[in-house]
Length: 59
Image (cartoon, rainbow, N blue to C red; front, top):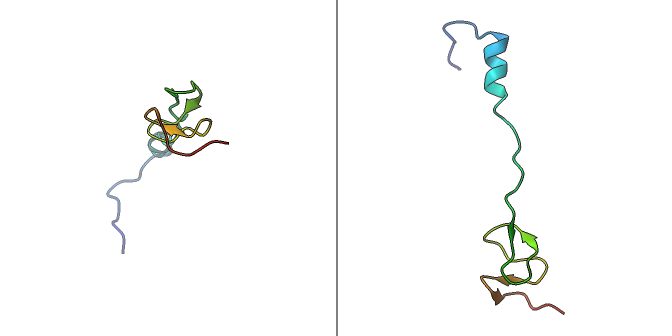
């Protein structure tokens, strides 16, 4: 059983509420070791380092 609304919500008010669902571009930072763009607080995909330390050995 759901709550019954006291008054009808207009289409404009309904659409204003739904307009706030939008996608954001991911935040990218430069890797401190190789300078490639990467997501912050993640291992760099280019050089395999995190916090200037090599985590994933590269060939």
